[in-house]
Amino acid sequence: MPVVTYISFNGAINDVEVQSGTSVMQGAVDNMIDGIVAECGGSCSCATCHCYVDEAWVQKIPPASEMEKDMLECVLEPEANSRLSCQIKVTDELDGLVVRLPESQF
Image (cartoon, rainbow, N blue to C red; front, side):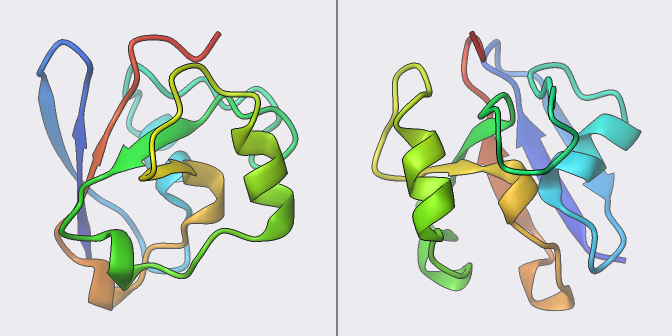
């Protein structure tokens, strides 16, 4: 099973096995990772699952859709590597993916 590394704003590191086909957001929610609120449950309509994809992985994940880009305009402290974790599906090729979590989703 692929492993996703979630790095909290305070530096806490959580390596979590996430089933292929599951979103990075759902992996966080299922494993009670602090920092991912996921108010809309993964429907790309709230931006409370914002994360920063580690630079080594940015080019390895599919680009953001227009809807995701629109929602990213609502996040606090957006960066070039900002993504909504509900829109990133875990695959075997993403084994080792690293995402950093923002200080706040609100």
